[in-house]
Image (cartoon, rainbow, N blue to C red; front, side, top):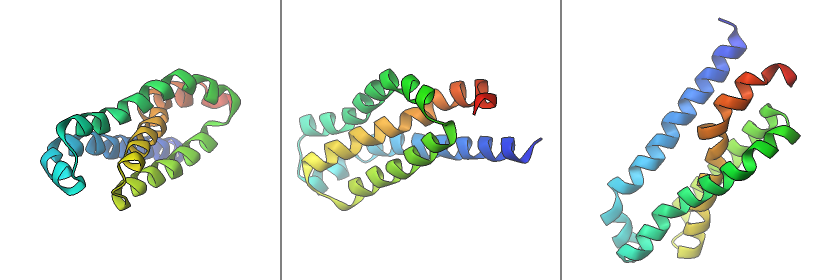
Length: 127
């Protein structure tokens, strides 16, 4: 197997593991999140669904982004912004910033969850 293809698939595999961990850890820690942030069940539900709002909006605009930019630059940018959004979630207790962080986490996950398999492998020869 080509080293570049192996590294792309390894990167994709590790990213999917991290994303699934992110999606799984929030429901597993709901009581702890409620007590740490001082929020009720309704606010926790909104916080948990913010990531899916980002995924939905990101999916609607994602295909156009792959048409305008190279796959590699999209992946690098989304990876860095994804790390930033996760970091904001870890360091803040401001509920508004938490919602933005979860929304942007979902938004930047789109290229890894939905679109990377489709666009980077089918059209990689066009880059």
